[in-house]
Length: 566
Image (cartoon, rainbow, N blue to C red):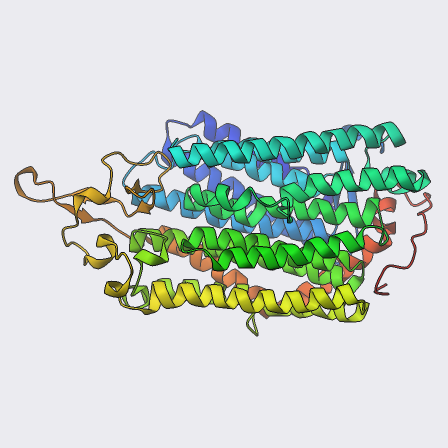
C-alpha cells in the first residue's frame, strides 16, 4: 500500500482528537495527553507522506471512491507535504507551550478546557487546506480553521480581545464571501471546481473572463495572506491574543493564504498575466510592513508588522514565475513559519519574565536570563537574514531570481528586498538593545515585576485578582500579560511574590523551534532540492494533472514563464 493513500488521516486524526478532548473536557490531564499524542501521531504520518513523495512525485486520493472530477480529491506533492510537516511541527510545539503555560500558572484547567478541541480543529482545517484538490474543499478548509481561530482569538473575553476579534471576524467573513462568490463564478464558467480539471478548462475561456476570475481569487487569498494593501487588519488583531494563539496564527494562517495564491498562479492561471501587479504588491508589502515595524515599541506589534513585511518576500518569489523564484519562495515559507512562530513564543516568555512586551518597560534581560536572550537572538538574526541562517539563504535565492529576470521592476524588488532585510535587522537590534542589553533602571517606564528579584515583594496594583481564562497569566492595568503572582506572607498578608517565570514546559518547545530553525540551515541543501523539484512540477502542471485525472489527459501548453526559469 502506498503510504500517500493515508493522506486523509492528516485531517481525520486532529478531528478525532478534537472529539475525544471535548468528551474529556472535565479531565484536563487526559485532555493534554490525547491532544499532544494525536498531534504527534499526525506529525509522524506527515513525515512519512513527505518521504513518500520526496522523489516519487504527486499522489491523489479520491474520497469515497468518486472518480475525479466529480468527487473530493486530496493531493499530496512535495509542496503540500512540506507544508504539512512544518505546520504540524510548529503546531505541536505551540500546543506543548500552551499546556505548560497553563500548568505553570497553577490552574489545572488552564488553558481553558475548550482550548484543546478548538486547537485541534484549527490544525485539521490547515491540513485540509494544504491537501485540497478542489476549490470548494479548499474553502471548507479555510472555514474550519477560521471558525476555530475566532474562538481562540477571543479566549478570556477581555475588551481588547473582543474588539480585535470583531475586526478579525469581519475581515475574514468578507474574504470568505468573496472566495465563495469566486467559486460560484468559476463553476458557472467551467462546470467544475476540481483544480486539475480547472487547469484544463480555464484555458478554454476568453481572456476577459479568465482575468476577472483570476483577480477575484487573488484578492480573496490576498486578504487571508495579509498582502498590502489588504493587510490592515493583522497588526491590530494578532497582538491581543494569548502568546500561544498569536504564535500559531502568525506562523500558519497567513501561510495558508500564500499557499492558495501559489496554487492559483501555478496550476489554474499559469504564465505572467498578473505578474506585474503581484510584483508591485510584493514590493509595497515588504516596505510598508517593515516601516510599520520600526514605529512600534511593543514587541508583539513589531513582530506582527514584520510578519506582513516578509509575506512580501513570498509573493516576490511567486511573481517571478520561474523555478528559481518559486523554489526560493517555497523554502522561505517553511523558514518563516518556523522563525515567526518561535519569536512569538519567545515574546510570551519575555512577558512572563519582564512583566511586559513593551520595550519601554524592559531592560537587562540578557543578564537576568541569558537563555531567554539566546532564544530571542538566534531567530531574530535568522529573520533579519544574517548569514549563514536559513533566512539569508532564502533571500539569496529570491534575489537571484530577480536578477535573472532582469526587468526594472525585478531590480526594484531586489533593492526593496535588501532594504527590507536591513531594516528588519535594525528593528530586531532595537529590541535587543532596549529589552536585553540596557540596565532595567534605564527603561523609560521600568516594570516593578522586572526590577524585583525572585521572591521579593512586588507592588500588588500591577495585577488583577482574577486569572485569565486562557492560561496566559494575569493582566495588568495596561492590558499586558504579566507573570502569575501568588500570595504569601504571615497571617494572611497580601504581599505578592512571583511563582515560576520560565518553566521548562514553556522553554522546551520554544528552544525546540529555535533548533528547528537552525536545522533548516544545516539541511538547506536537501530542502532546496525538494523545493526545486516542487517548483518545477508545479510550473509544469503535468504531474499534478496526471495524478488526479490520469495519464491519458493532455496537459495544455503554457507559454514560457517570465525569467526563463524552466
